[in-house]
Image 1: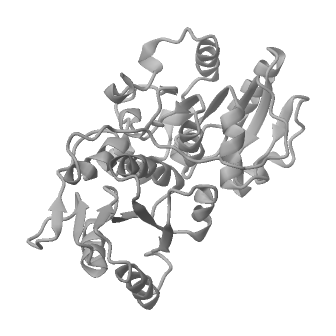
Image 2: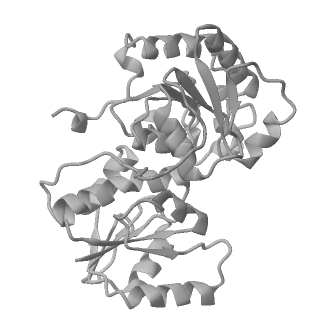
Length: 338
């Protein structure tokens, strides 16, 4: 059968939808799977991945109506059996897209209506990977959830990453999630003294922050130097990856890395990298998780990220590396119990 998956959002959201891909292939080993992205460069995440048969692009912010309709026409020609809509996509836009694509069956939390080919899925207050997985109950309500996975087949990185290397992901999409660079530099200095190498990961924006810094021996600055899939490859070789709630952290978890995610305005119960090697740290405040309430833009002080103490993060890193960490910092899902 032919399946279309809509996930025209950020890197982390795309990675978390890969659980759906894994589960579809568990159900239908010969599945033809296509995905809708919003940026062509995100295709690179799947450059070494033979699970995805086709790509489409929908970007409501910059594409004209004519461009979108041309892309929809390409989708209609595929005659998809199932169309799965990301739970975080806009309700009205999702219903219009489902109507235009015309799959035999469209499935989503947004599909409230009388159209016979639509299947409505009730919204639950659970991790986004589980909300994605709930879309598949239309196929088999006894299906077992699988964690997201990215393929690194034949991905090359011309850098020697030693076994005792810690990756620091210093950037995020918004300031409310971004820990101060000085904190990451503090971590680098202390863990180099403990015999670890340090790799800084990030994009062009983070590279501009790093360019004038004098870095210690043992620090490798890879900000702005790697493609997305190369960043995932480096993360897979690190013994621990530390960063805010950002796409690279989800990529790291999806390639088997051990992650420590610093949460602020988002709820780790809903957004933590979905892995049994995923840890998190946050502080409790009366206003926490404002992102979930749609109030993040109102915040000016960013206390939830700025008041995370570097010494407590370093202590937690030592515990994780020593495998003696308190379970309250470990992300848990009953799917991890076999």
